[in-house]
Image: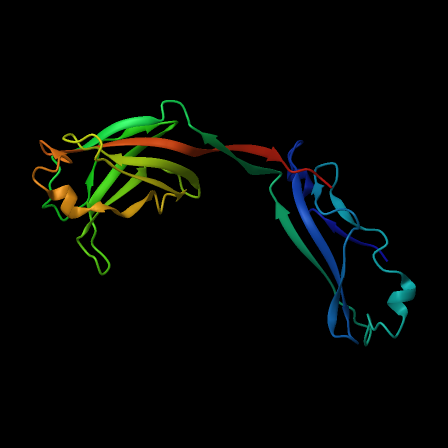
Length: 246
């Protein structure tokens, strides 16, 4: 017994058009009350085209097995056959992830202008560029937890991330002290960023009381200055790749 799939109206297919499919055939076994699966050995994906409009199994089931009453493929002159067909695109999107250590021009100085220790809202630096992406620093007084309000929270924020793209980053964030250059605060942060979560940082970057001291040197003429050094960054490249027939 042979069983085939065929394309309806093959004349509507373009000369170079391909329909890539993964298919399975079924025969119902009344004795076991389930479907027996038949697939083409060694081949997963096949393609229909204007030149190939029929695919299947020329030796789907031997008449001996089909007529064997022990198998019960036929009952009361009825038999049930079926097919599962999954259509795939002839091309698929490929993503290549590259990890870059110490990208060019990876150290930037930025500041939060008009920084206010009284603000209850996040404050941001101007955007700066490292690699092919723009970044900002986001700072605010810690709002959650048992030590609420005791810490300055600092986060590195990626700008313009596309949906469904994740990016890894590792960076050093240093807040500068204009009065005492040896009294800086520094943390290394890292994480996978996406369009839904574009921040990585520390909720307890430095004690708020150290920052808020009038003569502490961290806030100078309403500016809070940072040095950001991007240590590691990932790049994602997208391309189209033809599906290979196996």
